[in-house]
Length: 448
Image (cartoon, rainbow, N blue to C red; front, side, top):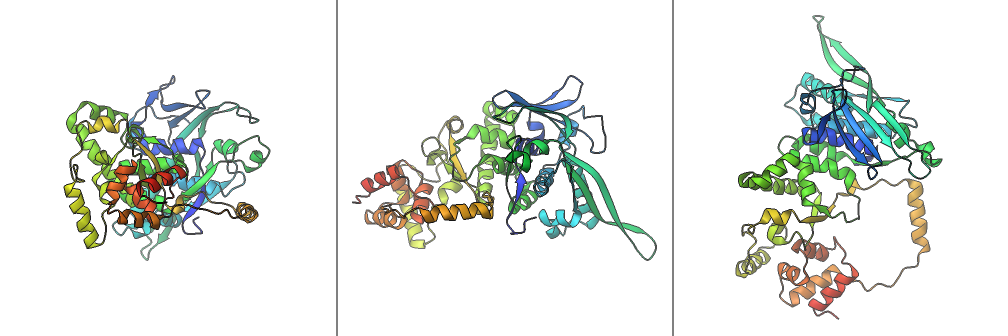
């Protein structure tokens, strides 16, 4: 895996996505007791025409699904990383629902960045890996899928998401004849879901799906390093892996992000109690900063999520590095009606409940991998296209025009109705202004 050092294809079908949610959000999801007395998480799919459900079961037991929420509470969020690694391994097989794959402790240690953990002994690492693998393999899935186009409907009942076929223990004997565990090899096979969602041949025949995405290596190592201090950020990262499409505006609402990161109960409690609300807001803004730090930059909707209610760190991103420019920045800020360091307005929580994030700007390694044949087609198509004459407004032109009028980035943002970070990204060339925005900028900056 990760032969390019950055990312690897992985199965990204709804079975994988929802299982990732189960492992990451655990008791924050709505678990119920089914007719047989087992706890189950289920939700409708395809506009209510189908459904997907999960149970929890010991990997080596055929029956005895969990009947108590303690089984859900015992899940470790890091098991989601093992689950994603399995989803990557499965894409390398032609018929993963029939073929096994093997993965040993050295590979897992490398993928998760655990070789850098000097605080854990070899025995502790092996115990942790074994536990996480068993948790990832404890999920049992049921799917009721309706007909979709030419693909017939199907049902899967009580099938393992991942079959843990075998665990091989590797021992080493010392001079005294004592044996020590030095390694583990896990043999795993994908469940029946793969026959319907990871079937390349059937996809060509239009009788099944073949759905995959790009798994960034940095996601796994980041989750492993921050899962304790910033669980909300980790939940959002894992959710964004499936939710966000590069280059498309998602317009994700803040209530949705809060529910993903902290669960409905905590959000409901915060809406009722002032202190809980303040605590949750601090945590949320801190988690957004963590996402931004790791390259998942939130693009705030300037209309519903204006600078007044944005986190302080987002406002300070525009702080110039040059000392003279920084002095001018703070001087202008001090003379303004509202200052960056002002506390949020009254009713900030209610404003946030109607706020949206346009999209998350993701790191390059999160991009969908493109096969060589697709790259050739793209290059050929580009070669056939004749270059068009362009009169686009460049970032340096906007920057120069703004300085000519002695406007700060913040002042220009107010005049255009955009965020200050949007102005900065346009000037830096990271974003390209749409045609209507270019017309507006030309008008405000007196550019012909």
